[in-house]
Image (tube, rainbow over the protein chains, first blue to last red):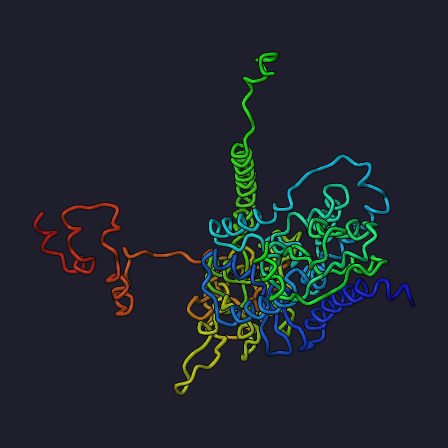
Amino acid sequence: MSKLYKYRYLIARRATQIGLLFLYFAGNAWGWKVLKGTLSSSELFGAIPLADPFAVLQMLSAGAVMGVNVFIGAAIIILFYGVVGGRAFCSWVCPVNMITDLANWLRRKLLLDKVERKVWVSRNARYWVLGLSLVVSAVTGLAAFELVSPITIFNRGVIFGMGMTGGVLLAIFLFDLFGVKNGWCGHICPLGGVYSIIGKYSLIRVAHNEPNCTLCMKCKEVCPESQVLYMIGKKSQIVDMGECVNCARCIEVCDDDALGFSIRDFAKSKSKGETQ
Amino acid sequence: MNTQNPKKEAKPKITERRRFLTIMAQSVGLSALGGIVWTGYVEEAKASPLLLRPPGALPESDFLRTCIKCGQCAEACPYDTLLMAKPGDGLPMGTPYFIARDVPCYMCPDIPCVPVCPTGALDQESVSSKKDGKEVLDINKARMGLAVVDHESCVAFWGIQCDACYRACPILGQAISIEFMRNERTGKHAKLVPVVHADHCTGCGLCEHACVTEKAAIFVLPREVAMGKPGDYYVKGWDKKDQERIKQRDLNKLTTKDERSKNKPQDYLNMDEELFDE
């Protein structure tokens, strides 16, 4: 039971990720009306449109003239993640997260970080890829990242049949295992970059309670975006960087109750900004 | 202390400014490299024109930029006709298409695949017609492709009687007609051969699906591939509507220009005098 509690968020995340894939699959296979379409664009309960804002942005850049539904869908998604925490998408919805988490778990078990040759990629590479995808979309007249996105490829694979999808996923797995730690999700993926920006000022945030911290650094070890935990052992404050994926792994591994979810207090952070 | 090692001083100093500019140059350079490879891949990926799209699809280049790859059309299709391109298919990833020989489009009157499209890549207006002042879905207006007959392998052209495609056609007698042709070999029989009419063919592929030969002798190709274009040099003089076509001709786009270029194209029909003058 205590073990279940220890992994409560991880279990909830996997349940959400697999549950959503199942609902999408059921939407196609048995005509369930709960969730139809794919992660690029879907229909919730047969009425509410949802759309990937990044896909829409690329298509606009490619010069597409689109119906209004897709803009409403994108607005709903932006609003949702703008409030909940932008990259909650990455850790609670995106199916590729399961693969990169597996690679990362293996890395820790095999002590790869301690032994292997280091390959360095900037954490900011995703913003360059994001900009680049818009440029390539404009040049080619085709949403460039959507054409290669392993997220929607995996998602469609589950719904419509895999084909060679496994090859794409294996490539990402190997890159994360032997290339760069958290290479895909934490460095390259431009969708993660988009949600970092969308969720920059979101409400639900991990908060650090410095007096409880024993500096064991388990949180930094498990965190897929460890740079966002810069305040550990230094200062009681919320994790304010947009790159935090709200996966709550840090909360789970902390034995000292020094980390927990909280609601961003705008008034407080504002007054703090003034005093600084 | 500089006097002890004057050589060291000669080395350029790495200032913050230099560091910033170098990092930016590196990032832009690597992005350019990535962009070139990426653009090349995208251009290759979209250069596969022999694809049949769902009914109401915009022209291919517009379709590619407007389709969000959500698969709602494929989910709506009751016959599982529509497929979503996946890795290994060698087609523009994630876009819907169908293989008529395997599962053709059965041309549902309510066209369930089109209204669900969230972006308008499948254009409802193009498959609607006015009925009693109201827009009604009309699958017969779909132009997914055009059936083409290979005269060499179609057994009807050999003189063997077969009208499988003609019978399978949902627009019976209009999209495919059976024409008589003298059988020169026997000298006393007729060949009954299928002829496709582009004005009515929707490209549903039921004919290709029904064709009795090992590899279909009638098959659907995208219209851009299957059809030629007469240009405005040739006009059906007996067709008022076709004559309208040359009036829209852009005279600035003429490749050869001489005295007569000043005249309107339709003047050509009444220029006997000029001919006799020479």
